[in-house]
Image (tube, rainbow, N blue to C red):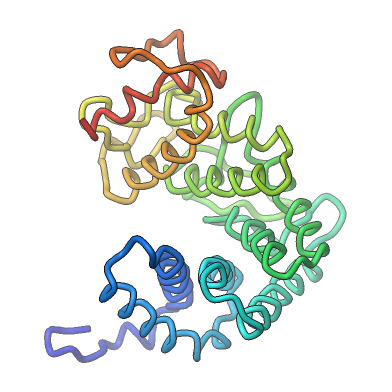
Length: 299
C-alpha cells in the first residue's frame, strides 16, 4: 500500500499466493498459542483469519497450499471442526493431483522440478494426515520426502537446491548457491517426520543438516558469526556471502531451537565450551557441544 493506504499496481501484477499462504500459516500458529499471548493480539489475528479463510479456495499453487495447510493444522489444534477438515482435504487433494500427474519412475515429486522451500510440500502432506488420519496422505508424505532427501544428502553433507538454477527433471543439477532458509525448512520438516514416524534416519539427517551451519559443507566454513550469533546469507562456490540478514539469522535460530530439543537429553556441557575445527564432525554429541556457543547472542 502507498502512504495514502491505497493498494498499488503491484498487487495486480505479482503472484501473491505464496505470501498469503505464509500469512495463513502465521495466523494459525499465533492463534494456536492464544493461551500465552495478549488478548488483543489474538483478537486481531482471529479477525484476520476469519477474513482470509473466506478466500482460501482461491489458493492454487502447491507451495501456497502447503503453507495454508500448516496454518489450518495449527488453527485446528485450538478450534477443531468439520469445516477445517474439509478445507484441508480439498487442498491436500490438489497436492495429490500434482503428485499423480508428475510422479513417474525415479521421480516421486509434485512438480517436474525442484525449486525453493521444497520440504514444505511433503511436510504439509504429513500435517494433513495428522488432521484427517488419511493413511494415503502419510504414505505420499513419506515417499516424496524421502525422494527429496535422496537429492539433499550426499557423502555426509547437506546439499540443498541451488538458488542460481532450479533442478529440473532429467537435467543436470547445479550445486552451490545455498541459503540458510532452505537448510532451516529442511530441519523443520525432518523434526516433524521424526516425531510422527519415530524413524531414526530423520533425526540423523537433522543432525547432519544442522552441521551445515557448523562447517560441514563444501567450503568447510562456519555459517554463523560466533561473535554476534547472526547467520551469513549464503554459501557460494568459492566464498561465503558475509551479509547477515534478518531472514538468515532467524532461520538459524529456528534450527537451533529444534536441535536444542534433542541436545537437552544429553549430559550438560560446561558453559565455557568452545568449537574447534576438529569438533566439526557429523556427530550428535559434537553438535550438542555447540549449544552454549551458538546461543551467545542471548547472554
